[in-house]
Length: 186
Image 1: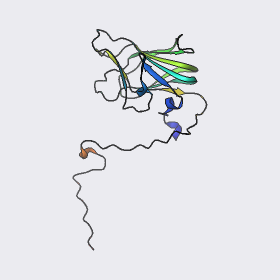
Image 2 (image 1 turned 180 degrees about the horizontal axis):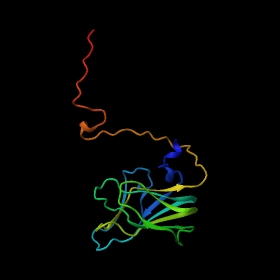
Image 3 (image 1 turned 180 degrees about the vertical axis):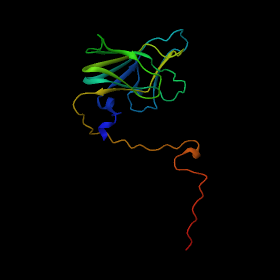
């Protein structure tokens, strides 16, 4: 059953680090879709390309990427439309492996490379967005790992819990219309 789900901790297991336009961006590799990185300048006349560079301590086999857009902005500020994925063996000489367009959605999107490739440096370049938006935002970036099975040792299992909302009426299991059952008398 576990193999049907995507491993949200894969980037941590692989020891990846990320930078957005040269500045640290650990939030896009943390496995938490509620955190995100936002880059760009709202005051420019046109959206400028933003580079998201990922470095691994050793070459990693991968067959694609999973990208999770920012989850907390109803206008989808920062969604990436056109993108380029590039790889490098030395961090300076880059070659493009995929170019395409993403949808403006809250859902995770996959970018497939076709054949599996092995690289130590990966770059996602946001080339354009939607509408007049001049920012680039990304909640998560993860590789579709195609290497040997990784050891889960030292990685505690994740326990998911329900969060309460600010309005108790919409919390699961709360029904204010239901009358409490009478307490049995001795």
